[in-house]
Image 1 (tube, rainbow over the protein chains, first blue to last red):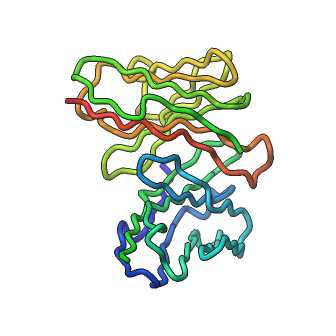
Image 2: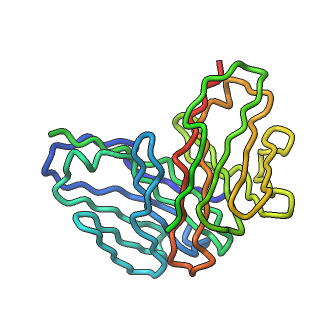
Length: 112
Length: 117
């Protein structure tokens, strides 16, 4: 059974703080890694799809890195804002089947 | 991108009853996926629904408990049968963008928050 681990489970930060989360996955079963942002009562929304070792992607204040050899990805948020409050999910795509294996998510709360 | 309409958004159901969740996609897709998130757990794949064939279930999920229909390329339903409190979860339908290449993301419905009492 493939396991995707995320840490921390939850995080409370002040507005303006920068933060980062970790996603660990089995490096031997890698096709792609996805990051999603999930707000309550909304659809999960894609942040990044990462496929290459050493990939670094950026969208505004959010960026992500990928190390497929050691099996981890980091998500960074610079200068957190209250609207960044959400659950951040990483998901491993172990093959070209469309079937995603999700971590438990990191729930971020940004206080004004 | 794709838009997926999922309903109901939430429901409270009595144990022993069944609930059918619907997902409508604004484009034709080959595969649709159904996920469940139990409280404190990860989103877990229940089954893959292909149009014109029986759904493929993941380990731990069976057709009698979670029958799926896929009558055409834009629509699917998942039924949660003979519900118990352990079925209280968020259910999500999803499509992937694999047909457009490995770098495409998945798209999700808004989820159905089910509480079984």
